[in-house]
Amino acid sequence: MNEPTATSLKDRSCLSKKRYWSQVDALVMAARCLERRNLAGLGTYRCSNCGGWHLTRTDDSDCFMRA
Image (cartoon, rainbow, N blue to C red; front, side, top):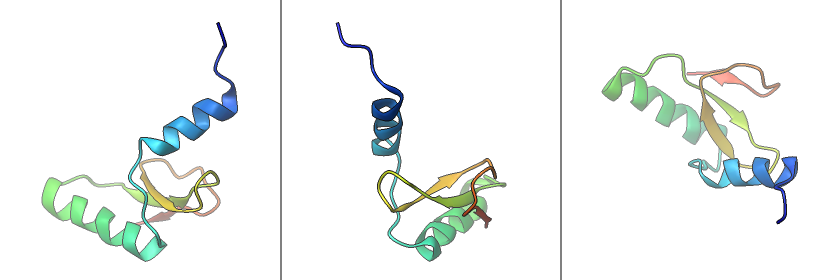
């Protein structure tokens, strides 16, 4: 049986996330989540797998920007 590699797990984690085509789009959604669901502390980061932008609660990325 094939063991999943670190790369395949990383790719799969990207596929399960919502992708935004620009940082502005991702920041708008983070602000909406704060407003509508009271989800504070969301930020954005550029994904090295897909080149898009995702939301995150951590700020360990070089491209991180908090909404």
